[in-house]
Length: 76
Image (tube, rainbow, N blue to C red):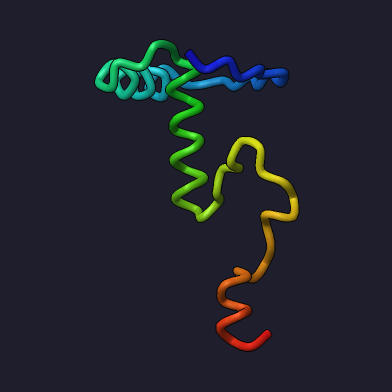
């Protein structure tokens, strides 16, 4: 089981139709809770927009604007 500590709370309001859609999606995928379904949908939405989720243990120096392999290839 994931032991991630979640220290932030996010409260959202949904319409009945939105809640039904969330629950249908969750039950189809046998997700344990609405919260886990929302987290998964958020992760998928961010990935679709090109936002990468940080790797656990990654350092800020692991991220940059230009890939270091591309820099070496282009003589930078």
